[in-house]
Amino acid sequence: MTQFTASPVRNRSTKSTVGWIALLAFMILCAVAALFPFVWMISSSLKLETEMFIFPIQWIPKVFHWENYYNAWTMVDFPGAMLNSLFVAGTITVGQVLTSATAGYAFAKIDFRGRDKVFLGYLATMMVPFQVVMIPQFILFRKLGLTNTHWALILPGMFTVFGVFMLRQFFQGIPDEMIEAARLDGCTEFGILMRIVLPLSKAALSSLAIFTFRWQWNDYLAPLIYLNDKPKFTLTIALAQFKMENITLYTLIMAGSVITLIPVVVLFMFTQKYLIQGITMTGMKG
Image 1 (cartoon, rainbow, N blue to C red):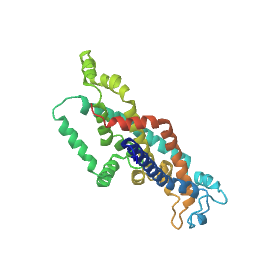
Image 2: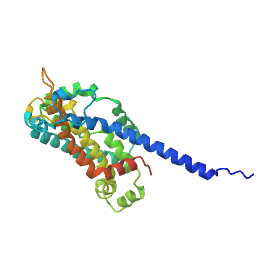
Image 3: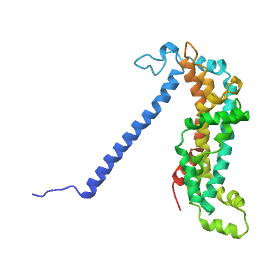
């Protein structure tokens, strides 16, 4: 009697298929878990206050209350707050990319005495949380007359250890031969940075810009500390105004949050290619 046995190749193929299906199911589950808060936010923004916390959750409202978006837009100075956030986040993003690029280039391509020790000390400051320095920083800015101005948010935000570290790692992957050849041709260090390094680093620069803009767009603590006048409020502080002394307008908070999210989503849609390339290539070291 002839016996048939499954070939090793077939067994490996079956195991590979099962593993791929399990991985796909896990990724779908993670995606659903990540999208759950956003779907609930959009659903809640179209409900009445009395319908928000009904259990089980009514995902699709019986009546769509689009007026929540109009009320959120008009009850507080939402257009002004959006312009303030665009100004603060945009200025910080441009400044942070420039300062991080120059410092990252110095740490990656300029050989000076004690470079690695200085970089290690600079990197160690990442372990100091903002809560530790916010009181001394507030006292300093108050003496300089910068409190209740957007410059109290912009000036410290233009310098970041994370950006320097990120770009340094990317710049190290650029061949040293190109840098040395430019130096032999008489090009200055600033010229090398502007003409050679930055054009080759569009992916890393775009990734840093996206991270910076998103962080500053959503920042709440710094504007809460430094800003007092309503015309200067950013979006995060404007949203907090819906939490009043005796009542919290949750549906308007959700509607305002959806409006606030739109610019970030649009930015990601147009720059996701550069973001993925930057994240992938920054960790490479030549």
